[in-house]
Length: 215
Image (tube, rainbow, N blue to C red; front, side, top):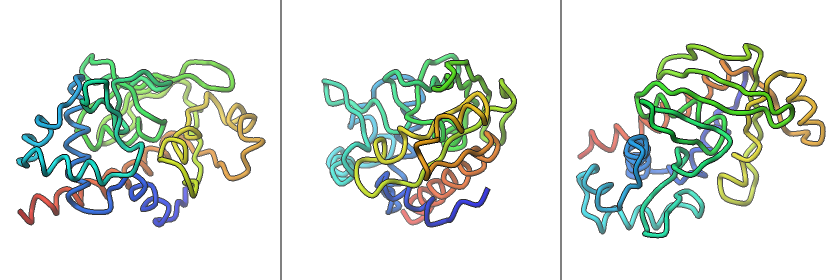
């Protein structure tokens, strides 16, 4: 699968991860969310060895829609979410969700955990199940499931500009039927989607590590 590097960078930048501090915050937040509980700004700051004011400042500068909050101002989503979506993402028996199919494929690498991913084909409603580790796709049912990918739209937050059209399909035929009125969409295998996710995950992790190294 040939995905231009500038497309990958566009996804990362739309998430607000243009700097090393932002990447460090996002990686830390994803690992906190993977524990299955809402994250207070104070807890996030402590995990980063920041002051609460520092964490709030970085959060405020992130693009709109990058972070989900609950009614108490706690962080409950940023790619991995505590709110139900079509993509279940189970970590150590903890029920979590992701915003899109690509998130489910790349975040095991970011958080360093095995995930059981359960979704449904939006065209056929057939179940799609897989096990993803930080290193590989361990299992996939059905084996010919595919992932839809689109270019990031010029406007809107990352969910409306990208995630809403990045889905799992039970077969290429089902994906092609869905994509008839979406000329910019492409279908890739789950393995190809995982490899793309790895590239984005490592870009995020490298930026976060550079921040830690420079401290």
